[in-house]
Length: 400
Image (tube, rainbow, N blue to C red; front, side, top):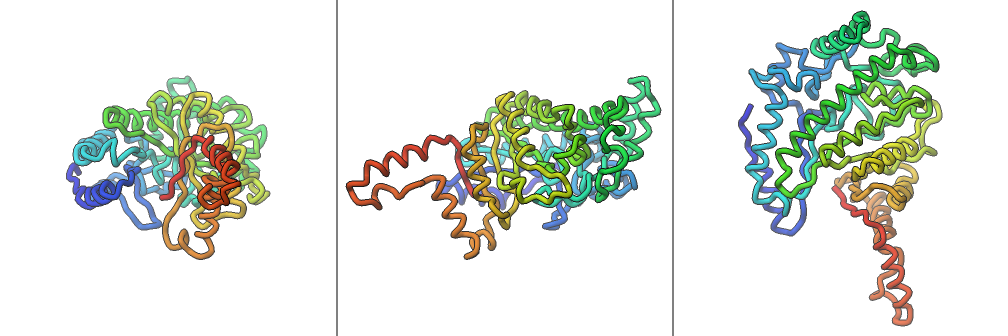
């Protein structure tokens, strides 16, 4: 704790600066199973003796790839709070990379939870395309979350509501046709509103805390601060939107759960990274009522209302049917996108099956007709007109 070796990253920054490219840096406070990157050893060792620092589900299973948001301001890390440790990390990064800030390093993503996203780990292994069979589970059973829930229930005059999450919520892979999420069931009751509001507010307060930390630390550095949202589009076509509820977004047929999130980003002058630009409703399985297009449109509308700019990403690294066409559709709309990042450069990206399609896609965005240098002289005027039209969009694109 408190000891940072930035030498490898400084070498990369120098290389990037030398060739005149730019860096977007992701500051990660999470681990992952694929690839296998655990949390720092000193954090994991504390977790072995204090498992309550991790998110916990109803069966007592711990999610050990990031810390529970309930410990943000508790001195669980050798006398320091996680927020203090995050701040020390950010300040060390800023100091070490000061020659590159605002010139080579133009933007920073602040890690906000599992896989860096603002959400609860409602699915232990969330697929990259956000496609899930079940509703996931509420992650409110670690000692500290239960303590906060108990206090909130007692303050509301309903102490019995603070004993745990909804008793009739399904398990991870069970479809939400019975119990808590069913039409007319507990999610629509006074108790349901109490629990879902509390659960969502805890997540938004966590995001607010970390984005505020990032803004205050890097605000004078000439960089843009980003935070990433998930696109929990499974079951969007149902009234209760269960996949969003378990992930921490109180978004239902009766309530917009993304306006408070957009407000929080606006308050901290941060931008949102939003995946799923390549996903279309037509290519989703009918059985889980998924609608990435409608969810994307809803989040975009909330961002537009509160003037929060969005950086779009594709969700599938191997490509999905109609993915490039869907990206073009999202880039051409009247929306709040100002950047699109295509993921991810690697073996499959440069494969003969993929790379020609990618280059054709990029050319269709940047150069709808041949450049005037490649046309006979008599057609130059028309070509220039086509090029002017292609520059009307203000969306920038990059590959990562």
